[in-house]
Length: 133
Image (cartoon, rainbow, N blue to C red; front, side, top):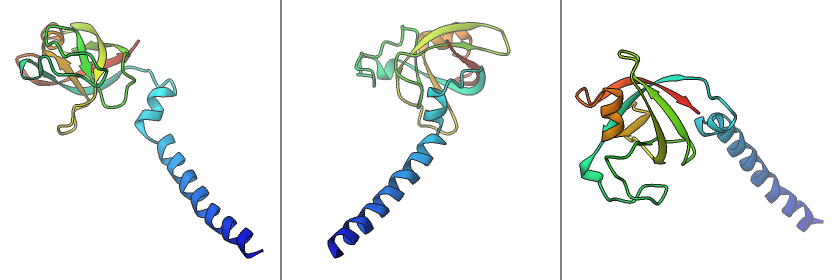
């Protein structure tokens, strides 16, 4: 009987830890991205370029600053998104191929070519509207 109680006592804390972890995951932005929260959202974007050229991205491909790609912390790799500059209306379609940015409150890193097309290259950091397609 003691071994049965001992196992049950050991299983309950593990079950509790699992349910707490599950609840935390359900409340995370990752879960929201997968649950179809696809309405356009204004985010802070930056861009990265030549210094990362040729490096492997999270998707396994090599980064090309001339490509129309982006880095996002939680969207699934391969996701196509439309990025629009609300000041000018310029937009670009990019594919999420990498993770990041990990600087400040930025939510999106664009390749140099994508930043040029959307018109934030000279500003460096700017608000953009992100729409998952």
